[in-house]
Structure formats: C-alpha cells, structure tokens
Amino acid sequence: WGSGIFPAYYSSCCGGRAATANDAISSSKINNIPPLLGRVGIDVCSNLDISKWSTKRPARDFNQRLKNSAKKFKLPELEKLQSVQSIQTHSRNKHGRTRALLIQDDNKNKIVLSAKSFLEFSNSHDPTNKIWSSSINCHKEGESLVFNGRGMGHGVGLCQYGAQKLAGQNNDWEEILK
Image (cartoon, rainbow, N blue to C red; front, side, top):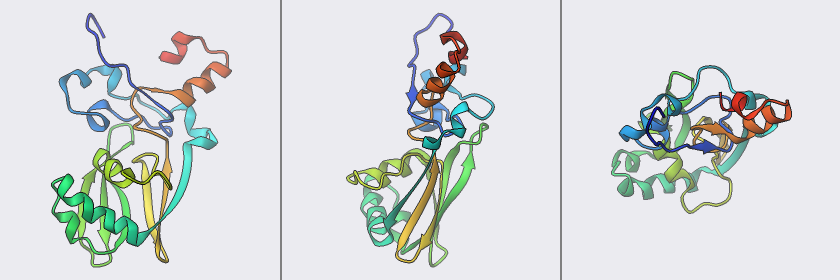
C-alpha cells in the first residue's frame, strides 16, 4: 500500500459484508490501512447460496465449551453463564459486519465477546457443526442451539466466492480487485 508491503488477506466468502483486519485479525498497526478496512456496500457474494448457512449444536455441549474457555480467554464471566438462551449481534463495523456478540442465558446473565474470540472458542476441538463466521444469530430450540449465519471465514480482504462470481461475469482482474 503506497510504498509499503502489507498482508493481503482473503476470505472464503464474506457473506456480503466486509470485516476489517483490525477486528477480525489483530489490532496491529499494519492492519490499519484502507485496503484492510473493508469496503462500503453489499458484496456480490451475498446472493450466492454458499453465503448463508445454518447449524445446530446441543446446548449442553455448547455451555460446557463456554465454561472450558473461561480460563483460556481470561473471561471468568463465561463460567457464570448457565444455559445459553440466545446469541445476537452486539455491535457492527461501519460495513454492517459483526464485531461483538451478546450471549444471554436463561437467567438473563449476559456477556459480550469479540467476534474473533467467539469463533475461536466455539470451533475449537469441534470439527463438526462448524460455525462458519461471526455474522450470526442464534436461538434455543428444545435442547439445541440453532445458529444461522452469513459468510465463511473472517471476511477480511478479497472474498474468493465474490471474486469467482465477478470473473464469471467477464470482469478483469483490476475490476475484481476494486
């Protein structure tokens, strides 16, 4: 960027809304440049079938994962949560991408987690029923938590499925990168 070298991130599918590298990767100074701060508007991938997903997890397993993650993420508030009732977006970046999530249990206890932390603990040691991105909402259905989301990956930089769609529409590489 300019005369410097910077990390050129890409994600599988941003789900239509770009993440910033500061939110999804790290707050390093190198990530605070225009190409890594997302883009205005809904991405072309938002209309693709792959941009939307849903998965279900046993609520008991997910609650145990919260408790196990409390020490690792230095969040003792996680241990206080009893039975997760819902997970909703708490804050968004200027492009509409989730930055933080609000987790609420049956007793109305609440905790706010960064989207990055949420993905780390919710997918660690669980290769099945993957939560593909932080752009989610979640509700309890019987003894399960149902996650509905958009996108796959952190959402920073070039969206691969969006780039593929644009290439299929005969856009050249310069138009795709813009």
